[in-house]
Image (cartoon, rainbow, N blue to C red):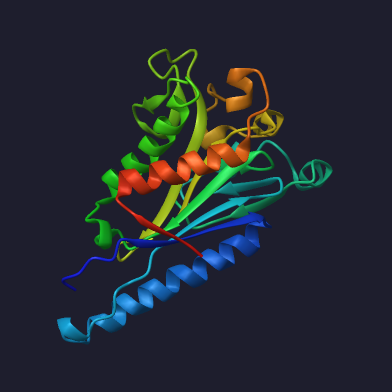
Length: 239
């Protein structure tokens, strides 16, 4: 296609069970893949633009293990999981184990990366940059940690480094799904039951933990949405 579609349908789907949100992602992801596949059989002037989606969600307590992760990084058994009101899923994203739960902003960009002329490295970099820019508005200095994805505080001091945002994605035919988990008012206790992202010597943190008071999550969502739109040059359409 000659025209790249940078329109992105945005929806905040609120609190949603992890599996239900995963199924919804898969539905949108597969629709984009099917459009791309069908376009290959058409002349350029008949090809249909591929859609893009951006979902914000908050999950009940859940641990997810990426396809390159180790079961040993979950430090709870099934009975203990139930006692913590938490569920567990092995999923098809990259990365190791992470936690999602109340007080966290989870963002799922389901994008045709070809619409944005992005390779995978730049895509992840842009996600990290949106979080870094959002944190700047709260005077929290964040950066990247060499050899690891996500956004960190005090990354230049390995003994103090702590993670405030995890990133794990899946792509097929340059279409993305899964995304990032940003700790705003997250219950950090739940990170004590895993080795976050496979690290045994690194802690998780949250905006609330760093600032010392509860943060307006709606305000953070709006800032993050604005920063994602700016960094990716998206035209956001509320959906």
